[in-house]
Length: 495
Image 1 (cartoon, helix red, strand yellow):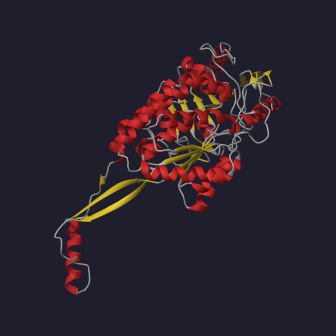
Image 2 (cartoon, rainbow, N blue to C red):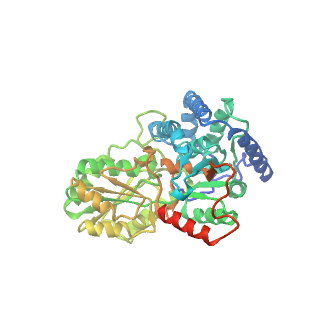
Image 3 (tube, rainbow, N blue to C red):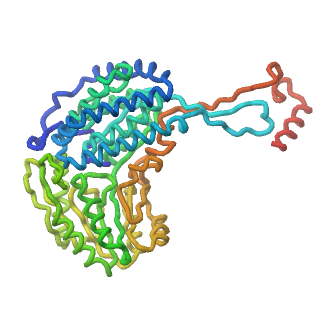
């Protein structure tokens, strides 16, 4: 997910969106270092907890989060302008699915794994043991201030680590509320989770203090994070930009595809890394598809009210509004037909949803990550052209194909350069935690979720145990002899 200012932006409510000076909650570098030191002390205790103990404490934390739901809804809504339903469904329900998956599967995933051994080593035992990395840094954006931090924090803690969280300045209050709920449970060593608020310099310091870093944000800043991690020789996982191409073939179920396109683009006001960014429709279906899309868009209810009858909120980051407007202006200048995209309230970052028809590949809306409520639709001559244009991007996070011919659609999906492929579906991969989640090309490094998405928070220790006979030397030890060499060679051939 790739907000354009990954270092974060100052916290604000919907009516106060002008970027202030340094946020009041900005820590000093000395305070960040002190928090990291306390986190390491807490981790030294936490790592001795059994997996069962860690799991039960995290379940207790979730119960406290559920009790704090009214406060969470209020704070997230104030900081992001999200509709209530999206906070509940796309954030809190997503966190619950992640928690349930990893707490139910932690023992299986993190238990010692026996390793096969050659026959010549028949009297030995070999296995892999998973031990915590230590202090994990999470540098998170503003578009999903609950789902992304908690989605990474839960497996990191289950694996026995401490967490140092650097949130976006635009969603500082949400992060501090999470930290407060975590502390007040009384279930964890003091300092095991710590929030480091501030600007990009704080993010850099957090990375400099950690044993592993997970970054979600722009490709541009992802490169900076990767260089910093490489300099320290620590692992980093990067989830960066996306430019989801949605390919609609002429035999698609067009009503479902149109509804999916509208939700896949305008959910979270278009600020979702895996959300639809461009649509390629076979010529025979273009007019009907765009008619259905326009009809669906006309039903969207946009407001900052707190009720459950709101579909579309606002942009979160002021600079993003200028990016979206520039993309729309470029599309108009290049001959596209644009409906919507009007500024409803600039101060509150309210922009009406925009439909861009007769889009062409050279337009910014088709080539650059827009990250806003804009849906460009381009006519193509066939599936092969659509796949070629879909792959004509440096980004490769998510893509989808829509067709009634499932075998053909699945086969075409294998030719798409994206880490997440949907066939008549989209944006659901994150909820299926048994699936690896991540991208290709410039959309990131590494994978979240799946078994390896939990194990990545651990060092792998390869353990070799000589079981018997207790006092016998190995054949390949000193002193060497021709007989020993022949015997070892013979036993190796039998292995």
